[in-house]
Image 1 (cartoon, rainbow, N blue to C red):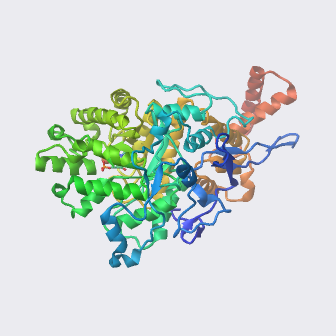
Image 2 (tube, rainbow, N blue to C red; image 1 turned 60 degrees about the horizontal axis):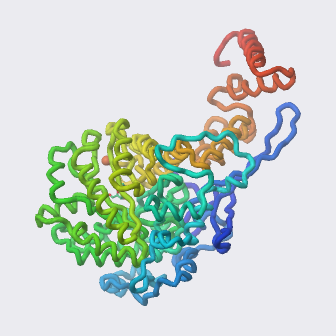
Image 3 (tube, protein in one colour; image 1 turned 120 degrees about the horizontal axis):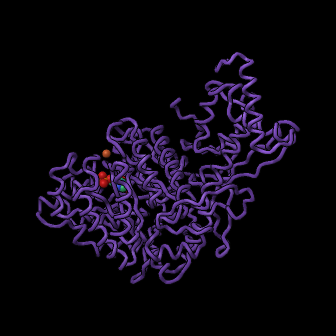
Amino acid sequence: KNKDTAPKQNGITRQPFPNSKKIYVSGKIYPQIKVAMREISLSDTVDAMTKKKTPNEPVTVYDTSGPYTDPNKTIDVHSGIERIREPWIKERGDVEELDSFSSQYCNERLNDASLDHMRFKLLKKPLRAKKGKNVTQLHYAKQGIITPEMEYIAIRENQRIDEMTEIRKQHKGEHFGAAIPEKITPEFVREEVARGRAVIPSNINHPEAEPMILGRNFLVKINANIGNSAVTSSIEEEVEKAVWACRWGADNIMDLSTGENIHETREWIIRNSPVPVGTVPIYQALEKVNGVAEDLTWEIFRDTLIEQAEQGVDYFTIHAGVLLRYVPMTANRVTGIVSRGGSIMAKWCLAHHKESFLYTHFEDICEILKSYDVAFSLGDGLRPGSVADANDEAQFAELETLGELTQIARKHEVQCFIEGPGHVPMHMIKENMEKQIEVCDEAPFYTLGPLTTDIAPGYDHITSGIGAAMIGWYGCAMLCYVTPKEHLGLPNKEDVRVGVVTYKLAAHAADLAKGHPGAQHRDNALSMARFEFRWEDQFNLGLDPERAREYHDETLPAAGAKIAHFCSMCGPKFCSMKISQEVRDFAAVNNIVDNEVIAKGMEEKSKEFKEKGSEVYL
Ligand code: IRN
Ligand code: FE2
């Protein structure tokens, strides 16, 4: 069951989802923008008695898979995917093209003959803001400008709800102070960005990415971490990891690579990634000083930031909230400091007995980030690594500092969101969200899980999926996925798929509970298919059609079973959905009102049941 069966093209998964086609919706303000969505076509509803067929409208869903699922696109991973945002960025007139990287380190690497086995060419000349210009979406939003990125997002978030006639019962949702409109407009996107309540991770050097937004008044997004320390042999393999995560629904990926060839690996990922890419630059900086944390300097870190910004990283995790005086607060914890970046900075602070350069040079970092529109993802270096340590003094002390830094980032008009825990039991999750909103003045929250218990190694996608759904409902903007391998080992492709799908369902459960206007139509369509025994439609509308079909095939592999009015769980005689439909048909024929019908239907079923010998399983 665990093998990857999807057909590949040059090592990259390119198979479209079943019964799905890629559609592109044009903008109104900017007709040149083409918003990619997936349209799932459905089979007809067949009336059980008259056999009359009624067609079902196709369902449009949010699509993160990029051009890879569009059979009409030719893709060459060695030159990268289409740079859809390039004309938008250049037309704004605020950028200049550089002939090579500003970072000397980077240019040396480019000429290093020892890299021949993994050589990459400069696929794209780096862009940088012209002197004195700020190219962030936040800056434009504050000027009152609706960018093409903003209109793209508005269209994408709505999922054509205004064109769908078949919007059935939709629950209102509990908003917890959020304010989600009936329809997301480009102006609403602009306002949310201007307010700092939403972030569009969109480095000018990553024009390949399809714009997406993080904020509690929008769909909850998910992140998949893909980098690892293993040596990979080819560009295709690296790109395939990213493509695979996006295929299953990752809204955004983080390249956490360490070890050799970080720069090259990242180049390939970014040039071929249809979603924003984040990194933790301190990891690469640490490689440059051979893993000795104390040897890190501001200059090495600064150069790393510039190098990555010019490659196109859309946001940086920066653990600037780990202050010297907070480190002792972790001494009596059950699990101490579990953040990699957090522990590096804690070590540095103790060794030098000073505040870290991330904190003391924070404004310098803002100057760099605004020249490329890299967003801050302020790291939670002191997040709890066990439920016992949840919501403790160290965690909340760091959060206060992150709130302070948010204000500085905003002063510079640099986009900013906040990372959060970690391991938190269910009853302590809401407090996290509320505190973050208050302390960080509504900057988007981005959490790792949280894991709601520590006792299920091997199932931490579920221990954390529970917490992720809850915090997403309370207002968290993005959920960092956890795979079944968490705490145990490096995730393989199957783990990535399970992690992404688990987080996608947690995020969607949160969207439903929040009452996002673009959420419930998919549930309704799937439920109708399920009720009408349109098995194929039920599979195809799901998050993982392949897995659903496999499970159905396991007991009823015959083609006829895909239209049968039962499945192997209850068998043909005791399917509640079948019985319920029979009751309805009975009502239609006998022209009886609901309550009576049910009573009468129940009575008949009871008689039938007794006549057959009152056996539950025939
Ligand atoms: C997300 C929320 N809190 C932490 N994260 C993710 O953890 C973050 O985005 C990045 O992928 C990773 C950073 O780990 P360390 O360095 O904090 O352990
Ligand atoms: Fe953990």
